[in-house]
Image (cartoon, rainbow, N blue to C red; front, side, top):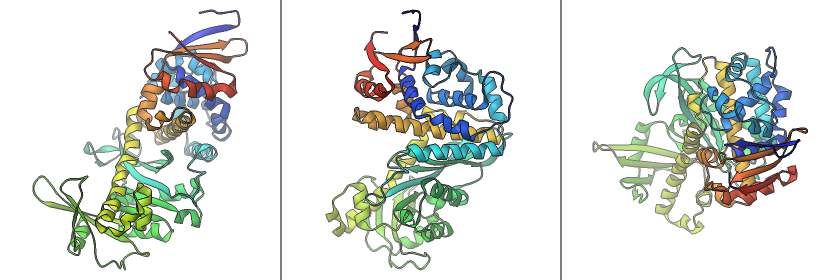
Length: 460
C-alpha cells in the first residue's frame, strides 16, 4: 500500500525475523564472511557470498530445504531488505554456489565463523574464576544417500544400521552456544573424533592451562575409553562422563558396598566403587556404578567417571553444600549431573533438527555439506544471541529453544515500511493478534531503538 512517493509498506510473514535482521546487519556479522571466504565462481547478478547470505537467511526463516529459498525469502522483499539484501538469488543458483566450494573455501568459512563466535559469543567471554565452563560433546547421525561423499554404513540411534554421515558437536551448555560443529563419515564414532573436537574447542575458546582446569567435559560412553579419558585428564580438563565398557562397570559393581535407590528413576540404583585408588588413570577419579533392570529381567550396569569434588557437583546442581555429608544424596547428585546432559546436548541437537531441518539439507558433495553445517551453526548461535538481547526485557523468552524461536517468535507477521529512495526501514508493524507478541513487543522496540526503527502493534 502506497503511503507517499518515497515510502511503501510491504507485508511479511516474518516481521520479527526482519527486526532481528536489522540488528544483525548493524553488527556486520556477514561482513566477516565476505572478508574471509572467496569462492571462485562467475558472478552475474549475485556474488557467491551473497548467495551464502541468502541460504543463511532462509535457514533462520525455517527453511528445511534450500528449495524453500524461493518461497520463504525470494518472495519476501522486506525480509531481504532487513538483512541488507536488495534482491534474492534463485535457489538453484545458491545450490550451484555450494557445489562450487572447495576444501579451501571450507577452511575459510570455518575461520570466519570462529571469528564471529569470538566477537559475539558469551561463552568466549566466560569468567572462569567465578564459574565452571561446562562443555557437552556428542555425535549425532545425519542419514543420507550412500552415493554422497563421506557417506558410510554406520549406526544411527533411531534408524539402526544405514548409510549416512555423523555430526560431531561441542556445546557451551551454560549459554546453549555451539562452539564446534564438524562432519564425519557415517562409521566414525566419538572415540575417533573426540580429540579433534576438543582441540578445535581449545582454539576457538582460547583455552590455556588454567582455563582447561576450570572446564568440565561431559561425554557419553562413546568417548569413555581408557585412552581417551587419560588424554583428556593429561590435558588438565575436569571430566564427568560414562565409561565405555559395560563389562568393566559390572566388574566394579561387585566392589560396591552400599546401593542407593534413585527416586527420580524408579528401579535404578547407584553406589560408589571401591577402592578409591585408580591406578589406570593419570589423575585421581571417582567411579559411580549405576545398575538398573531391563524389561527381560536382566540387570544392566554403567559406570560414571568424574574428577569433580562433591562441593563442585552440588554447586552445579544448585543443591545445599550440607549434602556433602550424605553419601546417598551425593551419589544421586553425581548421577543427576550426568543425566542433565540429556536436557542439554541431546535437546539442542533435536531442536536444530526440528527447527532448522538440519538433517533434511543434505548435499552430495562433502564441501557443500560442510558449508551448510557451518551456516547452521552460525544460525543457531545468532538465535541464541538474539534471545539474549530480548530476554533483558522479556525474561520469559529464556526458556525458548530453537524450535519455538523459529516457529513462534520469528514467524510473527506484520508490515514493514521502507524508504524506497534510501532503501532503509523506518517502521515495523507487528500483528497484534499474534499470541506471543505482547510478551516481547517492548523488548523488540528497545532493541531497534539505536537503529532508529520504530516498532508498533496494529491490526494486520
